[in-house]
Image 1 (spheres, helix red, strand yellow):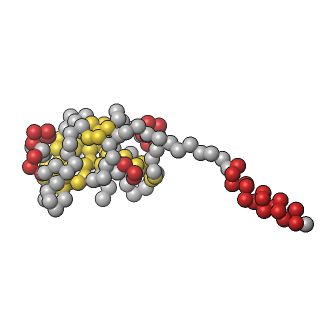
Image 2: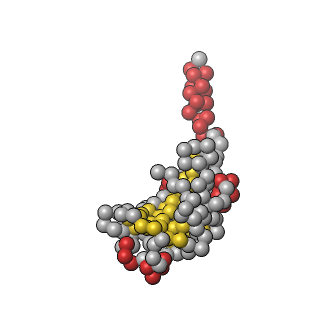
Image 3: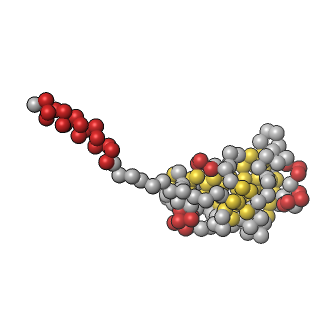
Length: 161
């Protein structure tokens, strides 16, 4: 009887050791080209399947039927693709490289990179680009703390707020 109980306990404790190994998806470093509207050659108007094929390391996903029309989130890198609305959002803790060092830049110092904004508000500026729209959001210190870019023009873009 003691041998049976010992064998049973041994089987219980050793069973996790034979578990299935899973490979975690990895992605290359994100390089955002703000002048051409791409993340590692992926445009904001790519489908969710195209984005996930290029960047399989996403942390969460919302379906196209969700409130925001589909979101592929890379939370550990502070980057989101809004697939139903064709724009990319880059947060203040973005881990990657920006072609133009906009994050943390002072509001009045961006003319040399982007020219004059086409639209302005107290907390954001929107710039017309060759690919669509670039929107910069500012914190209380008037420094860039959020970047959104889209293949859509300013008159048709729909942001998820």
